[in-house]
Every structure is written in structure tokens, then in C-alpha cells.
Length: 245
Image (cartoon, rainbow, N blue to C red):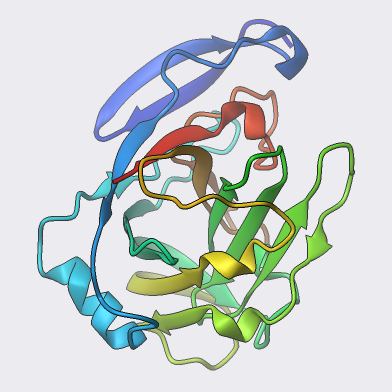
């Protein structure tokens, strides 16, 4: 759909670019990129220690701020990311006025709730994974292999350690003024559908998202811009670049 505008609001800068259908559009020059700091927390550190790492300073804050103009709702969403070689650590910071958390166990539908997401292509092939967590810390991890329309659930989701500032009790839509965080520790072994070389010194492709499909005012935000006519997160052609120290 030529001429449609995708509004970019990355780190406080707003830009408009012409969006073409994915098959006609080159990956945008504005593709996001960052360096992921390496940290030494020992093997499988408690999630509380991972959480405190992000508050100690020295790890850059990034905005999830790109949106589609037909869905202008834009909560304030940022994240920090680091790695240990064997795990990836992420902390999301969210400020919004509508929240929902109906999924109260893993492997349900967190994207219908107040949800943050990490899509990543960590291996040597084109398999990518979508990790999605609602605000009370329940989610999914799927791997999607090249040529397959649907993802495959990844087992042992309990190995992903998580800490949320919200009580871990389900609730329906609430409106008000809400600030919440969630910290995740994701072992590289979770990406077992791929051959994943050591992270340090590599650049891999990924994107970060925030959504709430079933909120009164749905929203769809990305870190690296996705130039599709309608909201779509499963778009590896538009993943940004993460360089791992």
C-alpha cells in the first residue's frame, strides 16, 4: 500500500517515512542498532541480582517508540539489555493508563494483555524466537523455522527467570496511572531449535515490542521500525542489530 506513513518516535525524535509492501521495501536505513554490554554475574544468578544490575547504572536505556498511525496509542516504554555469555538479561520499564492481565499461567495468550516482547534470531540459520510476557510475568516462547507459517512452542519455560513489580494475580482491564517493570533472565539454551555460537563478538538480529490487543485502546509499538501497512511483529526483515560485547 504505497504512500502509507509509519510514524517513528525513537529516543524522542519523530520522523515520517514512506512505507511500501514488505516484498517491495528494502530494510530501512533507520533500522535500529545497539551494543549489548557483557556482565559477569556468575552462573544462573538470582533474578533479584539481575534486576539490581540494571539499576546500578552503566547500561543504556532504549525506547520502544515506533508505532502505526492507525493505532496512535503510545505508552511510555523503555528497556535495558545485557548478557553474560550464557544468558540474556532484559528489563522493561512501562508507564501507561490501561492495563490487563488475564493470562495467569505460561503458554496462553499474553499478547491480549499488557505485554512486552523480545523477538530474536540468535543462531546461524533463519530461525527466530518470540518471547512474550504479560505484566504479571506469564508468557510464551515460540521458535519459528524458515518456511513455516506457525511457531513451535519451546518447552521448559520455567527456566526463564522473571521478576515483575506487579502482583502475580490475574485481573481484567484497569484504567488509571500505572508504572511497572519486568526483568527477565533468558538462558541461551532456550534457543535449542538453532545452532547458536557464542554470543560475544557477534551481531544478531532482534526486535523489542509492546502491545495490548484487548485493551480499550489497543497499541502496537516496536524498537526497530517495521514498515508494514498493518501492525505485524513477526517480521525478521525489519529486525534491528544487536552487537554483543
